[in-house]
Length: 115
Image (cartoon, rainbow, N blue to C red):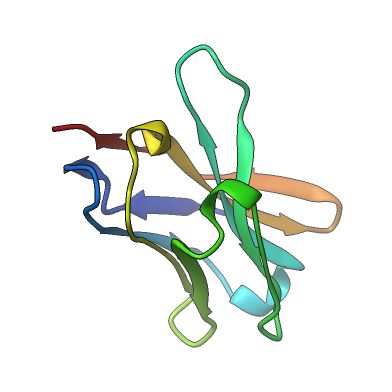
């Protein structure tokens, strides 16, 4: 059973930083890509960032230059470092892993950017 568990969400002021973590059961090498999605109230879930097994990354335009996605294959953990946070980054952030044509999801962690 693939299990993904996020941590690290919370309340932060505009301009601040947060780092999310995602612990993934099993070997990280099993997954073609791992990444982060987010869903704001009243909006569809959207891709934030992905990282592929050998290191290449992909970012949504709105977070380029502010967010950094990384994976530790030995620790089976993925991270999302979020800098220069804006109120529009407020959302539930979900960890995602793709393998064998299937998507696996964490339960989500709330990130709120507000003064």
